[in-house]
Length: 182
Image (cartoon, rainbow, N blue to C red; front, side):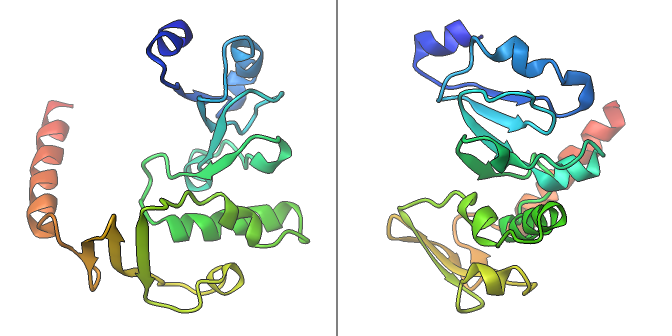
């Protein structure tokens, strides 16, 4: 996989050392990993690996695998959800609480820095100021308007490119089909 990714000039997204059963993952991947890799979880990673750590605190806590403390490595860190929700501000708050549980001197600036931001986007929020200290303790902050490369894609909290009622209905149909097959 690493050779194919290198040949194609792409990175690798891999879950590594998420649980104690994969504690040997760092050793196995050390000779392959490179800076283009996205290392999901890394909760029990025992050594530095090249790549960006995708930190998923809600998923890790939900699966009872522990808290990753991703800043223990020099790697870049990005906050993620691993598919459990999509509210990145809530993920930021949870990451901050978990970080504070291990070090009370930590500030919300650390997990705030883990949020990936697209330079081509502009967001108007339902709360001002968008300061990490305020956001760490203020629930229900939501994007009101979002522009990507000048196009309004979220208007007063509603998507402009898709019908959310139709999306939910189709997703529900597919979920029922999947569960029936399981």
